[in-house]
Image (cartoon, rainbow over all chains, first blue to last red; front, side):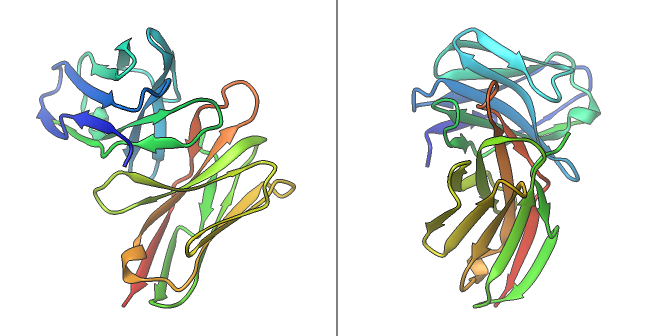
Length: 112
Length: 113
């Protein structure tokens, strides 16, 4: 298994509260990604990073922000959680362009 | 928008039979990757096939790629109950941005013992 750890794995939070999900990798891969998975939509890219402090938006970035201060950590923040952000969030890593992308085990987030 | 659409959406077969899943996409690719996801778990990488490759094998898995038709297929031979899972194809587009995966919605495979 690729060395990817997501935390927390499960979280229930209230609408309007901030939430941060953490992805930690031990592979020293340059690229890191956050996806969300919802029934009927498959996996959709939220944000990605191509290096320390280098990030960009994906397909569904509204309501999310990210930060990458170290190669090994990529944080996803929901500034003010909404019920539409109830989802399973997956972190992924890759060495570079055109390479295999490996996924973490997921973080289940419920916003009530 | 979703790229890499899988077909069929659901497939039910008997143990020992072969399972074929198809994937279509719309734009040029750098590579196409197949993943398996068991219920409640993360995605497990199965095979990566590059745009200049036509076929790849890994154990009981065979992936083909037809870039002229913008399609790929995943064949699982001699299926087992443990193969029950959702299977996704994801494309990595060519050129700028060739580090992002775009997923289809997956094929849900059920292998009946």
